[in-house]
Length: 447
Image 1: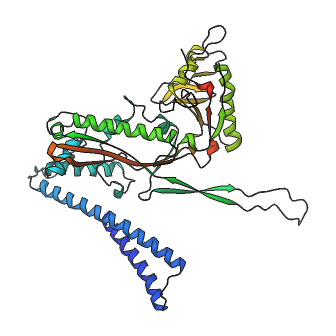
Image 2: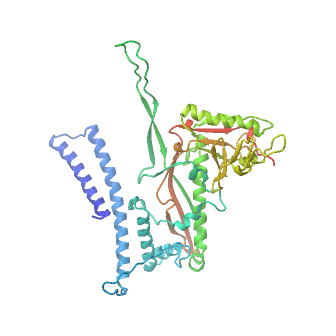
Image 3: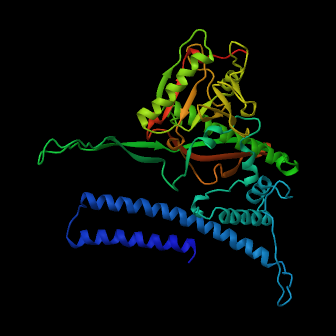
């Protein structure tokens, strides 16, 4: 049974459940539904709408596949001798070395009804389904951006997403809905010593609060001339890659700094972590060090968890690296130099986001999305100490996976390229699993 058949079968089952409820009401000569029946019918109606939309998308894809199959059948296959075996290693449809351009094919398929381009796009989508076996086809609402373009998203020219890649607990975003709901126990049960036999034992009613996490849309667009798409070499991929780099950088920035209002993400900085103020008119690394220790212990004593990472701006790590003692010996040195009484030390090879240094045994992640304009003087940055298991990120599989083209100005031969994706973030299950150091002691350092 195909996936489409399974969806249709479930749609039929939903209809049968709904009919059964309504028939029961009719048999009892009632005109109103009970609260429980109303809730069930509403849920079934919502599910049926979602299934109808999914069936429509799957049928559209099936029609496209059938048309591509018809084109392929017109080409006579090469006969293989009976009993012969052939092992074929076929490259992916879209790679940096491939002659076909993903963006150009998407344009030609939509605006020129180019069957060859449609066939390549259909083959690419099938490759993605194989590559992402655990993901339902319903998650691919648009064209999935080839991985080689997505791989360009982080390291060059933009801040990227070091925080999200290194210090978050990652989940797949559910296929539908714009909110995620998590129950948080705010009042726990109690236990105590029983005073005497048969005496009343400790009893406290548990209570919880709903944590609602909003799914947010990150998107970008670019107007491109038809000439650039049709006659250019690599221009389309260059523009798409930059949109993707921007998408990842924006998401990382939001998950660190977002206010949670007006469509923004409720980021780590505004999630209620342990606030530690470092005030100093003449800041030094020696004065900062106790605040760092306080950040660690507050997570351990309030959330009862072990922090896993430091997140700081590259300039703050440089400030630590530049610090020297009274004998002008550096306070932060690589391990292989045999450090004596350092505050931090090298902790392995440097990689994207990972500075290669550790502080109090925790790796330091440098992220240029950490603000540098905080405080009254708009010149302060912040230092975060986090327990990674409590930094939760939900991304839709393949995001930013959709690429749309719209003729924005046919008279000017202009095409609009749009990249978008959905994500949600929360540090709110246990806000105290993060500590945030801020204050006048973190003004822009001088070197």
